Image 1 (cartoon, rainbow, N blue to C red):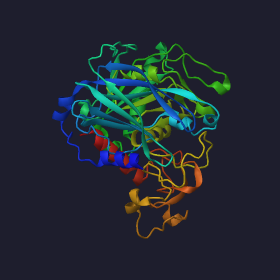
Image 2: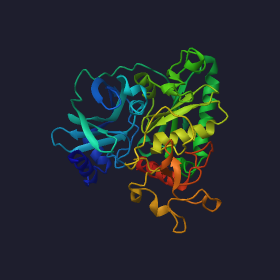
Image 3: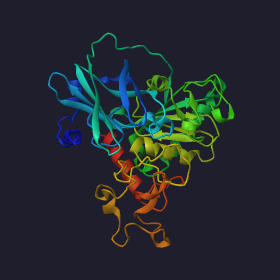
Image 4: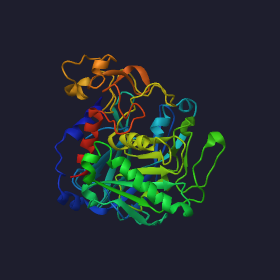
Length: 425
């Protein structure tokens, strides 16, 4: 409980880093990338540092340096070593924490490469890594000190590609910067790559609430080409040599299209400023994935690509949870019913007051029956988070529930707008 209280006080503390001047006091306009290894099983997680890298761009805000959303499975707090002042923080989830909820994690240990990025510090800093347990209580797992003048911080550019802008609305520091990483596009398919990037930008910016804030976005891509067209489909014994190493059958779920090769993905992304990484895979097979503040993927040529694109970006950008409960997934007991989920659009009713209770009309009962009169209203509908019972969603239908493009419910739209606002100041 002491760990929880300490973590809460940190985020309740009225921190003074709210101006660009503060950014310039502590940081350079570049990125410090910390690659680390996350090892464990279903109950244990261990951290070890892999590599520190100086990258040429910082795509994030220069004013909102403290993450007050407090979502995700992990967070990192960065302190100035000399003054012990908190100067930066970030919350996120990873592929490793999803793997911890699979049956495989109950029988073995695995290691995953992960990355934390921050603006490049001018002076020595101390990092504290936290992990959230199944009761949503934060626990400090790892400390690490960094001297930015250390000559072992790599400045090597390992994956050099030209970047190009698809949508350009101005300075990265006041925009949401999305970098689209192409995978499975050959040299001959470069025109298709650029056409698909434009198509994906249109998917985002023609979908509410993104379209109402389209001037708040920059969308980049890079000319990263693959030896072979397509992607890996292990269940069909199809293996392709591609630049980002994407693959279906992640955690043995056929439609889960993800990337284990984190270091390579980050090398590719370093060619542009970014807040969010979006991997566009050259395949027509249905699939994709999205992890909060980590990355999202989508099959470029599937007939439902517009839905997949925005659904998975909802996960990665706004921390939205899945609202469906009838499809097969690899994770087990992902949401304990005695704990309120951190995702803004699902609830176990343990602490519904912190969710969308104020958005439910007084005429709508809680929980809300699946009756026609309530299907277009915000309520509390049972079924969500891969569970038919005990987990509730805000509306009968939503882009986070069914294959339906441009159908985010009011609760999901509000969560997205809050995140856009965070990056736009």
